[in-house]
Amino acid sequence: MKQNKLLLFGVLLFTLIMLLAACGEESEETGGEAEGEDAPDFLSILTGGTSGTYYPLGGEMAQNISDDTGIQADALSSNASADNVIALQNGEAELAMVQTDVMSNAVDGVNSFEGEPVDNVLAVGSLFPETIQIVSNADSGIETVEDLEGAAVSVGAPGSGTYVNAEQILEVHGLSMDDINAQNLDFDESTSGIQDGNIDAAFITSGTPTGAVEGLGATVDINIVSMEEDKIDELIEMYPYYAEDTIEAGTYGPVEEDVTTAAVMAMMVVTDDIPEDTVYDITKSIYENAGDMAHDKAELIAPENALEGVGIDLHPGAERYLDEEGVSAD
Image: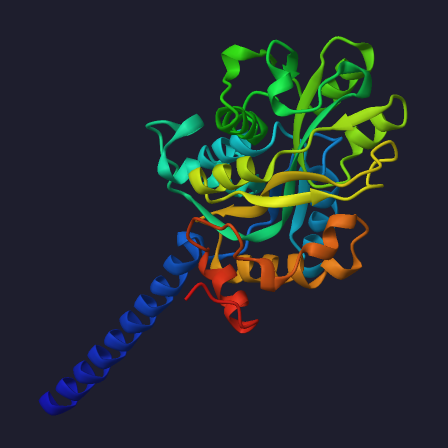
């Protein structure tokens, strides 16, 4: 009898141990999911003003991401690069289109982010060149950057990368914001101001053709200022995230000659708390649908260009996709 009781006790003890082990495994699995490995139900993608390049491109990307992943992705209009990064930093969105120079400044804690570096945003990849266009009414007499001295000039909306571009281009030409009558206007306000004669010129950093500039060129005779080669070289030497670019004749109807200027890259970034598999799917959707997108700039969106100008770490999901495509930072 005593042996039977001991045997029964042993069986019960073994059963209890197995049950506790099974509960422990289930708890560990559940804990992993609770730590944020599940795909989100919604994604907000911050873009730029409605008359720029970011907004229409972002809208197409959002639709493709929704179709490919089953996650509801929405493209939202914004004040563009710097404001987009701050919104990601504050957890107000998950993805954003930004200029590569602005994102590098954010990580380094300089310029608009002086003393406040951003540490929760990672790269998905570069998209296309953003051309710096210095636009004026052809009757204004503004033919060179130096001609901007004393003029009323829009240098971009507060929080935009355009402001930093304007400041740095003025710098290499021996000017500063104090030498112009700087106006903080968005693209629509800038082109309306030129059309109405309220401002003389505007810096517009955007993929070409830019809708706001196209609209202005349809109503007034415009000029786009060319930069001298030595000034572009100086700009690139001081700030390596720039590259020389050309606005080809005919891009805007009234502009009949090529315009030599500088450009930065547009890139997609994501907060670091989005799961690796989700960002892998997002990255794949962006690059593999580019050939079917309507915007002219989409033809430049390709995996082989994804690391151009990227000065921050890639999200592991984006890195995995690009590795599979044979694109590596090493």
